[in-house]
Image 1 (cartoon, one colour):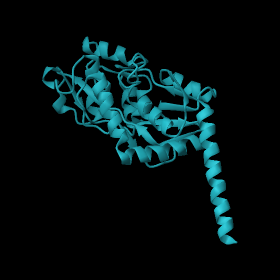
Image 2 (cartoon, one colour; image 1 turned 30 degrees about the vertical axis):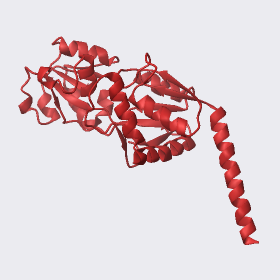
Image 3 (cartoon, one colour; image 1 turned 90 degrees about the vertical axis):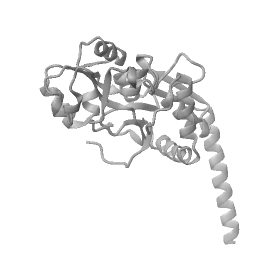
Image 4 (tube, one colour; image 1 turned 180 degrees about the horizontal axis):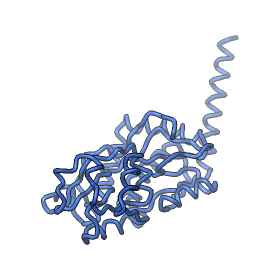
Length: 270
């Protein structure tokens, strides 16, 4: 009798799983994503950028067949999710509001303090050494890089943030600023230089930032749990690495040694 009950229970679980997969296949899923190249690309058929590609692969593996990705700036990503117009938001910086859920994986950009060759980079060992330098970064960077960075930048009257990262690159290269805080690989790509062309680059990346990565935020706990389990599988079977290598090939840059997608321990948000 117990064996019969066990068989029936297993059959019910199997039917329930099939129903869940069928429902996911028919459901529309909206993703509020970022809008800066080359990490997020919307004018190519072969890649939508590294982090969009990773998320789409995971959702496809989970049988989500109707996924819509909408590009926004940082404020737009948050606003879209909070208004209930998206199911997932990626590239979320800062605290997550009550009622939303965070995946165990984060997007890890190559964020560095990038200095011009005219700056004495050897003397810069910590954020306090940036005092009196003209610094530019992307909007909300002061929230992304922790309280020490925010406090230092508040004290520095020559610090400014722009919504468009392409603008920060142009101003920095034009000599309007001494320091740019942002992604090193994206900066090289904006100058049409590869990671192997460093001898041609008149700028230096300094790894002195505290940075845990940007969050993936879900409207429901179920979606985040499904993504976490799928990302675990993709990490183990090499799919994460394969997608990353494919992306480098499509943007025409040699592979840069960096872990772009990282699992983190769940900790309470400040």
